[in-house]
Length: 249
View 1 (cartoon, rainbow, N blue to C red):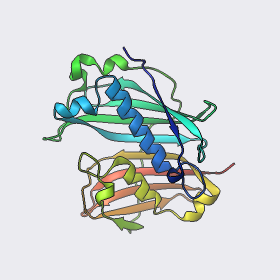
View 2: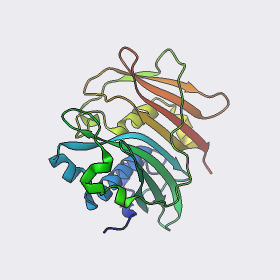
View 3: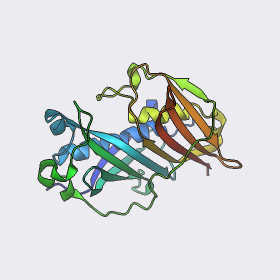
């Protein structure tokens, strides 16, 4: 049996940094999803096996909290493990460590397993005779999960359509691209003086190629905290998010 916790090394390459020189949030989130996939594949319940059975994982909720970011050329590790399993959802946590193996961030995520053809959820308790539940582990992850928020804004701050580079292998808008499109709507100056401390995303509807989407945003008074919704034409909410900045040290 493989170890409960998988640990995966990375290095911040030049094309992965934002204009401040640190690892961009989009690449960080993407590395977390890569580690989730590697961890699952190595333990027998990942995409490689599921695709043959007509099933796939879908990310439902994600909360990432960072205290600092690795810089260009620095090595870092992302660790991940399964926290728990219910019939319809499984929770997976992450830990980010810097080049000196200090913890610099955590994340919590929730996933569902769906049938590719019907888009209906599958029973996780019966998945491969309980293979997933066998890896449940209670390693520390001291951050909160996704909170509940609503946006009161009636006019969008921006609009976009998912294009080729936004679409993942499931044929819909990639989970990280939701976050990147939201970050693109924020003023550039805030990234110069502040770092992204926490991002929460709750996904509620799939978005597809060239679908018209709008971003609605509330900024909390006297703080650098934003509540966000991505809405489809007609007003259906595709995802809700919260972005919290803190002043750079």
